[in-house]
Amino acid sequence: PVVTFIVFVALWEYMHHTGLRTFFDKPGRLLPSLATVVDKSFVNPQPNVRNQLLVSGLGWTTFAALVGLLITIVLGITLAVVMAQASWAERSIYPYLVALQAIPVLAIVPIIYVIFGGGMGSRIFVCVMISIFPIVTNTLFGLTSAEVGQHDLFTLRGASRWTRLV
Image (cartoon, rainbow, N blue to C red):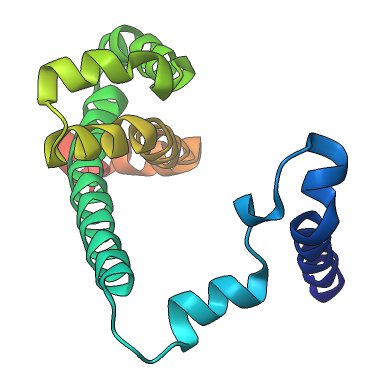
């Protein structure tokens, strides 16, 4: 990992100094050097509007990601439990989850914008859309991966569906 990081930084510096001009006929200022990025973003002690916008944007992005993840966890676990309890629900819902996973987000951005607007709702929806499939799939796999012997034991002891689920 250290060698890869060093190669990455060296490539970055090369592209800043000569690579953009050589390969793409573009000025080097389009890709500032790592030292410039670190200096202007983190080292420079003078508070300025850019740093405040960076921190503010980071806060709102974190908020959208956490709210989207919370919604996804609740919705995903609920869907997985329903799908684990009823095979007809799994056959009905799972193909739509696969289709949702296969749709490129950029292709439906105009639709998301029309429905939710350009605010926080659209960002949260995109977070949910991206993370719902892995949550449902992994939870469903965990719920359905109990061994047959355990199911037999629960049947012999007269356990209810709720007990089996829990």
